[in-house]
Length: 135
Image 1 (cartoon, rainbow, N blue to C red):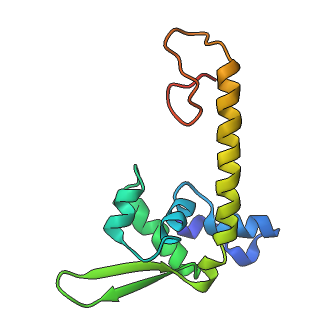
Image 2 (image 1 turned 60 degrees about the vertical axis):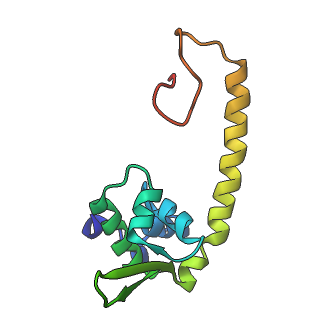
């Protein structure tokens, strides 16, 4: 919940400050989508597999309150709302680029490690990204 988050200005270190603003399961993924340009709520919802509308709304509100995204409301029928990155949000682009690069390298290392492992259980795969993985 937003009221339980540590306010960014009270964080103890720069990393803590950053995590207070963009931490959690969905915020970085929302930012990833907005790096490509303006998005409507429905586009974001479809792009983020598994996020509920309530959670997406909450995360968008928090990012807006922290000055990371801009919410533009068009007064028309039906209502139209678009989300985009603010200059502060754009400043996160290099951070996401480094995260992307790390993820690619990590995935390659996991794949190589998986190729060398012997499964303990029949039918077990070595997909480290989700369900059905070994411990």
